[in-house]
Image 1 (cartoon, rainbow, N blue to C red):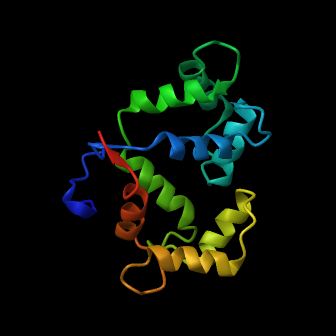
Image 2 (cartoon, helix red, strand yellow; image 1 turned 120 degrees about the horizontal axis):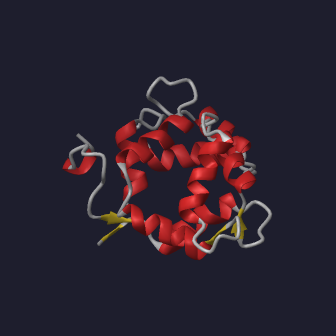
Length: 161
């Protein structure tokens, strides 16, 4: 059971990420800020998130579907289209994101784990900043983020559709 009473059917039905949030995600992938995501940029983010099982062949398949104009890149319009075709945020995607942060796999995200992932993603946040991030999400006061807290954080800014 997901928090908020939603059953884990694989899709958090009824929730759509805002365009602003998708733009932030797109900008993370677009590391050289040229307005488009290359296959190399896509793979770099996946590797930073610990998803090294995404081999070039699989990224190639993703680009075959997402690169609507066939130029070898995913622009923001194509990125939006790809996200809208998904129809919402899948619970499995959020669980994968949680596992990317939960480096030691103990079911809790610590300040050290947030700091490490931010560093891998090229973000320049201090350990103190990461501690503030954890505190902002930690609703039960145990100084770590569990799956329920993570899901609440990830879905609270999503709008109903």
